[in-house]
Length: 83
Image (tube, rainbow, N blue to C red):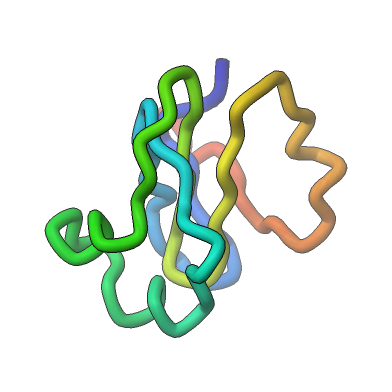
């Protein structure tokens, strides 16, 4: 499980999560910078994958398809946005 209220301290955006999707390998910083948080625009680079989850803010993104410790991801600046 993960917090569903994640917030990025780098771009100050809420981290969006999408169940059963991953990000296409062609995704880049400008794609998210220009398209977050509009789902209709993000869908262009979403790949359906059962059991996976795609995360993104305006400056970072990750696809997770298994148990992952995000604390080891030094470049991520995602914190709980407080419940």
